[in-house]
Image (cartoon, rainbow, N blue to C red):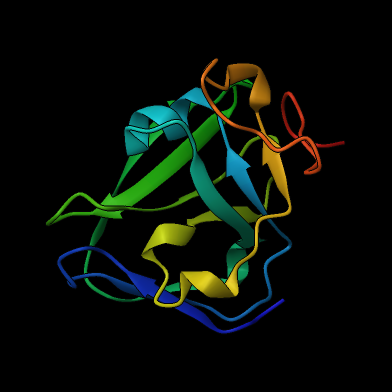
Length: 138
């Protein structure tokens, strides 16, 4: 997979980079992704947290408990509210989940699985030939 990913928010105030290759990419059907994005799922890339750096602008975060009951911080642009990334993932410490849609080149990321399908909406289409998991794999 690719390294040196860059991205930013809708208004251009926040820019960030990731200097490591993604550990995985997935379509996530958890309720947080549905609520934060207003759709059936979000496409995310899991990357090492220490490889992510905000280059400009200010992010705000919202702390909440994930399905594991452990804390997560969802970061978004303080100006336009665009979702950027989630970190401090209790079930996957040291991993930050980048929102693929706000990458400069989202086509560089190819999701290889669907996760949290136990929360998928009944009308969601999950291809039978793509691995899928009711929660996190493992």
